[in-house]
Amino acid sequence: MELEVTKAFPTVIGQLRVPDAEAMNQDLQALILAEEASYLSVGRSNIGGWHSRPDFLNRPEPAVGALTTWVTWMVSQMVDATAGLGAFKGQLSVWAWATICREGAYHAPHSHPDSAWSGVYYVDADKFNPNRPLSGVLEFLDPRVGVEAVSTPGDPYGEPVRVRPESGLLVAFPSWLYHWVHPYAGQSPRIAVSFNVTLAAPDTVRTSTIEATAGRDI
Ligand SMILES: [Fe+2]
Picture 1 (cartoon, helix red, strand yellow):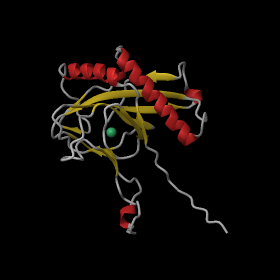
Picture 2: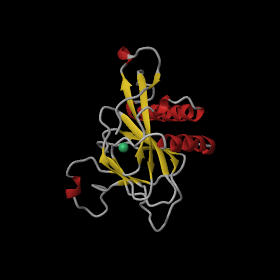
Picture 3: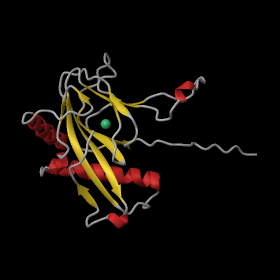
Picture 4: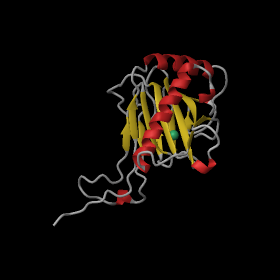
């Protein structure tokens, strides 16, 4: 007799520490801080802080191109992990926007409509402060409606999943997964680039396999 256990309704969250990211991060930091000084924040999920326009990946700087390559590669891996290796033959389109949090800023709970995969790359996450362990932490909410009503010691239902930002960390998750960012308590600007990715079936693919484009952001 063998018990068969099915882990139903999985939700995949990917984390990748980009190797040797220091030079790329320095260039991205300078670029984003300069852009912040050039126009007012776009209002989205951010409460306080600054939010760029959604065309960040259209810039010609090599660091932006490098980040685009990492994001595209990681999302391709996530698609393979869910759909099956090589099962998806269509086109990935990615667009992104930069955010800056200063002390007290946070992101309200939200999802990312009209896209398949979303994520964030931390350009500068500041140092961990043991006195404020939730500062700037990315928190995902359990998407299963009503599961918090189940109360069994040790069960995982209704518990949030938290990701502590690190400079050079790339995170990807399904766009429908609600998340928010705890109020930031650091002294230096917390700088990140968030992104959305859409997947187009092969019969709608135009020419290239990868396209960076402007579009809706959250
Ligand atoms: Fe988000």
